[in-house]
Length: 338
Image (cartoon, rainbow, N blue to C red; front, top):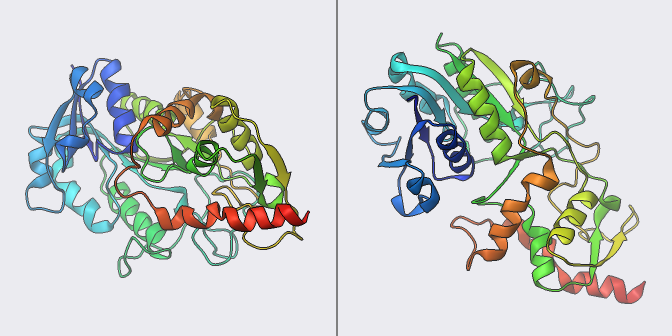
């Protein structure tokens, strides 16, 4: 039986990966700091939890044990994180590092976290230029996140080991700490009768289902190599389509007000408000044999059902991020004056 070790296995991507590999007959070790976050269904399916912190001396060695056929690192954010992993890779058949589309820059050097939005010339391929690697700025900052990811990627790719770097986009799925679809799910829960969408709801920011990422990880495990792959859903719906998908699944109806550029600033905000839209090219993954689990409308259902079932939002939920998107008073005032 092939053995997989998933670092950060209780998170969004880690959970989906553990479930996918267990269903395929793998022996899966889920590594995390808090055993209470281990989903019961993963344990029932045979997943084992190991308590370890990669920031503590010996933490990674404890998690890996005698080696593995596959290591999936969902917690590699810096070059230092990558260097900590290197001494253990001699006993690993294949390694997957979860990176991000945030590493890409356009012709002007802008990236998704820049003050100026990037403008990419069509779907982004893996050959697109990236930010310069940096380790002198925190990875939790807007300018530091992508730059630190690039630094981590290069440490692993230059090591000579069979490492695959995956660059997903807006990840969605059960267990998300920042579930973007919440902007519409909450409106359904609040019985809002009107939905306002900035710039006509035409914004696009390519979603990546955790289940589709897990499917690509399984494909990579069967084809070890040194490479970079984009990872996103087979479709890239705009915000209006996403809002309709959420409302339809939850059985809700609202009037859609598609705002133009003359609408007051701050109205109709949502997480996909990017024009020109951002899309990832998935050709390279397809050539490797990857087949997605499903499109956005199919794969997002699990997250929507989960959001409607939980009693409280997940730990680390970013209330400050979502708060400007729920200015109901401003919306009602605008609607009253129409």
